[in-house]
Length: 502
Image (cartoon, rainbow, N blue to C red):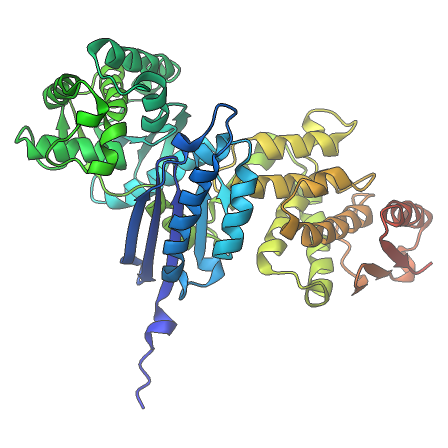
């Protein structure tokens, strides 16, 4: 029998699903020797953004389209471990008031959590995907990604983004706003362009000052524009020249109606949203005075996979975000180290009994390091201030649910146990995060006097929701006993038990 490693020992199967405002995309790839090899790639026009009613709720039909697509994606995930799959939702899921209803049904169908990511996090992941696709190209790049509900703009060099923005304009949203009755005219087209130029005015000067050598476009609209231009013999494949784009604009206006938009190189299912997407692209060319733009095949789903590869390693972007927050809010590093060490000592003792996992250990460690950032605002209620900062700051690498979970832990680390904030977490996450909060509270309590060394000579036992803490006699001075008595009362008031030796 050969000693050669098997494929399962050397190959990691990864998958990403991008729940976009216009299309859903699935990418499955094997990761080996630092490279991704595509196994499966699918995309379907679901048009979630077009399925929003007047009250910004998904219609039943839009929900069924989404669930039907995910049901078709599901068989491709059979060989993917849960930790190697990420499902991310973008603008339409950010905007819909009833997004939670769709997410709950989708998670039940696919058997995996769905993460709603913020606009700048979406931009970061798009850049990561495009940058890997362009790894051979050096210099500063402008990346533009026109989606169904938003458009992302990133300037970066190599694999490091330097400016990230997400603007509220997309081909589906602009179709509804400017071409709702299907008519295409110079006046309607220009109105769409002017609306996009108004959005771009917020970033135009700053981006142009930063500058770039290579403008790059990614995803559906720009891919379609490049394909149509190439099919008409007006440019090289994968390159959009300014004059060719203006000629395409003219041809679209001459179509007169969305139902008559049919061009060589344009897929039928993109035809109705294509004019709005081209109007946004024309505005981008105008605002940034572009003469040409290349198309890159790397986009959000590729970026999600590359980000997934770096998770739980020293390159985890979330780790860098935590360090950045600590620097920004001048956290006492020595104290943060001590609270983290005590919290993880507690975690490791109850991990098996409470069924906690390594990812939750990471979040406990990060919360321990960040629990005092609110002091930069005010000493009074600083746990509330810290939670607010964590929930609403831009933190690259974190999805919105992850930031909410981290914010909950910081909110819960002192004073009354925050049941309202706990109930705001996804139902499946509540039991574990309530337990993590109890461990963090103990770690903070034990380091209340800010000792030089972390307190890690205690024993902690867990039986269901009862914790029993045993401290060495030398630790049982009046301040600690007073704090433990108070903490026991806080936990008892919400039906939890904390016992300790006196």
